[in-house]
Length: 138
Image (cartoon, rainbow, N blue to C red; front, side):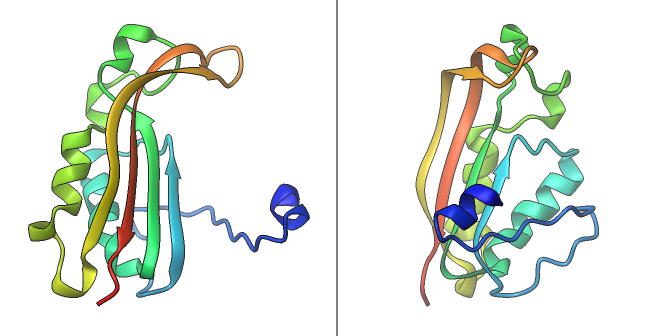
């Protein structure tokens, strides 16, 4: 919050139970999900909700561990079922998966290994998926 204020950026954060959170309609300029590993039913609900919740031209940004992360042991959930993949994200935001007024342009959907330095238990190489999509103006 302090860094955003210093840079003149309005930032709203929320702590919520995503299984029941109402994202609203056309409410968000951006939705950011960083290492937010969810059980599959909640993950599917959230991913399905994102396009409708974004304003036209809004962005969805995500970085999360992939199942390959289990080989690196540098953080993340201990279960593959909680992890993401480029396929999960591609399928969720494919044109056939979203409604006519919820179309998303996938800008980046890439699995890669990158170095992380986020504390004692999150340091070293990590297998992640990076995803960026923009809600198409209709």
